Amino acid sequence: MMNKKLMKNALFSAAVIAFSVAGCKKDEGPDTGKPGNEDRWITVSGALMDEEPGDGNAGTMVYSVTPTQAKDPNVSINVFDNGMHVKSQRTARLQASADGKYLYNIQYVGDDGGIFNKYSVHGGKDFRPDGPEVETATYVSSSPRWLKAAEGVGVAVRATANPVVYEGTSPNFVFKQRTAKTDVITLDLNDPKITQTTSFDLALSAEEVAAGYYVSRIDVPVINKAQNKVFIGAAISKHNPTSFTFDDAGLPVFASDNSSPKSWAKTLVLDYPSLANPKVLTSTQTRGNTNGYRSTMQYVGTDGHIYQATSGEAAGTGGSKILRISSATNDYDNEYVFSLDQALGLTDTYIETWRYAGDGIGFVVYSLVKSGQRTGGYIARVDLNSKTATKYSIPNEATLDFRQIQNIAQNGDDVIIAVAPIGQDGNLYIFDRNTGEMTVGAKLINKTGNQYIGVY
Image 1 (tube, rainbow, N blue to C red):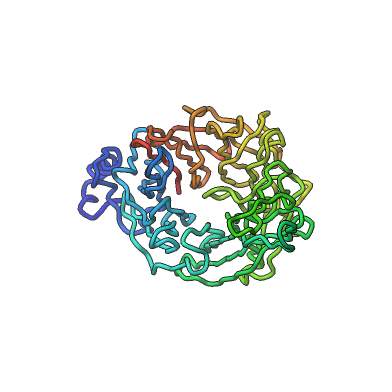
Image 2: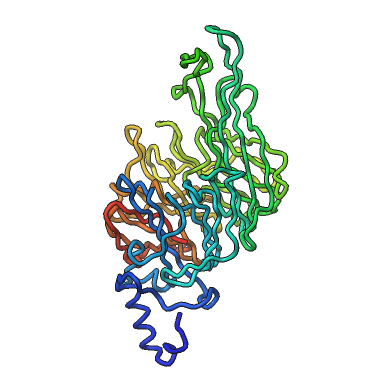
């Protein structure tokens, strides 16, 4: 973007912009104006190391460029020296408007944990507070899980397991149940404020409860196409109801049970916008988690159905899946499943995140589970209609680590992923959703222990 003085000489203006992005000088960035003067900004985020390389616990930096700059391999982006430090003690949970002109954040832990901030994006490190801060910690803690669940609407959630309920006297204690205190709020992202809240205890079916299963985490909310339901992914844990030790007070501590089969995949659904009538949906297609980690795992498809990635399946049980929640029934379509293992001919794939790009096409970032550890970082284009997938070859894929990844950007037919090893330089990679063509974009300049984690 050019100011009035620079507009007198277009060639000089272009040179200034190119130098300011590529030059890596700390205080320079593209010459920008108000949001709306650019059709689109592409914001890149990076996580700062705290104690361990790649832990991302010292905060988050952001820097924005134009789409043309993002696709140019001759441009260098150094978010860690040139960017703005987003408010957050640890890794910020960032979201963005579809047009890239606004960035949203709920600060994670610390004295200001749970504070919502909105920024307008002006290029380079110029991110300006927009509207009031909103305190959400009262409802969803200082470390809420949240997403932009629909354009202009944020949903923040928390599930905290309640103490185990038991009966009897020592030593003949009998396990009864464990539920989860669950809190959900909605946020108006256009005029920042909380618009609805709810709180309830969440339990699974009586049979599952008796067997020791309970909801241990919820995340990645999405609002359906009809705008009348909000779907929230869940992780399910399990106790062994017949095995316990005693604490210092002589009360039972029921053991975790990691040897029994995992729960069938679950999703919490509530009415929207009222957040009433909580219900747990069950898939019979996979025993995995649907809550993901820090990034979107479910999307409203072009056909109106919700497509939901899973992760954490036990070794040898088929790896990550993509499930479908029907727009007609607002329940799982248990006749549909996409298996990444089957599509790629692999074993024990683990979807770290993905992006639904439209018309049944998605781009999946995944690792492989070997000896109980997630290894490598890989990218594939998936066709959810034909249930096929094509893997890309990217540098350092056997040693990449995408576990901190938060977002994949889309601009028209371009899907943009930040690819860089921890503490090493990398690039933005651009994928054409129609043709599948991959091209190398702007260079990402890294620093020791830091990691590029998102594009918006």
